[in-house]
Length: 115
Length: 111
Image 1 (cartoon, rainbow over the protein chains, first blue to last red):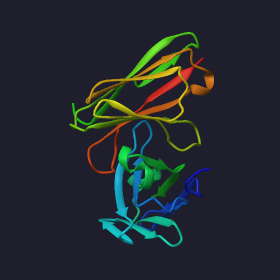
Image 2: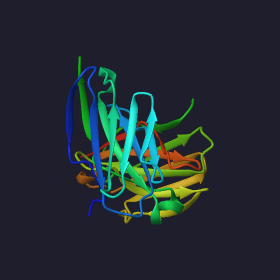
Image 3: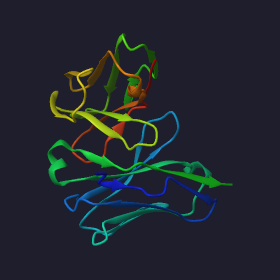
Image 4: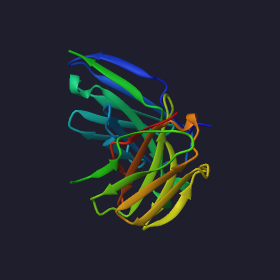
């Protein structure tokens, strides 16, 4: 049973427009959520996170929204740039994972930003 | 060097070979992780070490054997692997927050 799901394997957006990447989770014990970005031939790099006590966190062009009742989070990138083209992973932590600092990852969404 | 490094970056091995993957972090972190990423699958956590002690073994077959001699180094010893073990193996480290810092990975091909 996959506890973190990213249902869109890929997303294509025009440069300058908004990119919205979605993530759903099933475990209500998760209380911290993260987004990572991965370029080819590199490991994932941390992008932005949000605690369950918040519903929004913003960092420059990146904003993460959390809807706890729907068990849904999304990453908004505005404006999108070609350099944002990468695979984006959603991850969730908390509950029984807390002591080990474990995160459960989604499958990833490949974002392509066209010039 | 800074961050998390992994060697080798690419490895091709036969099913009867023995090889080791190495991970080193220069961040002063106290937790280290091995992940497996197969095509079109999410990252699968394999092992977790906190302060050099293994705290998680996620039902990984015994043909994968981790070793953590100190909080900066992590190894993954491989022997008698199967073709389905071909994947990208990622190492990560963490301090007190949830954010993990990943190495570039080792692309393993088992022939």
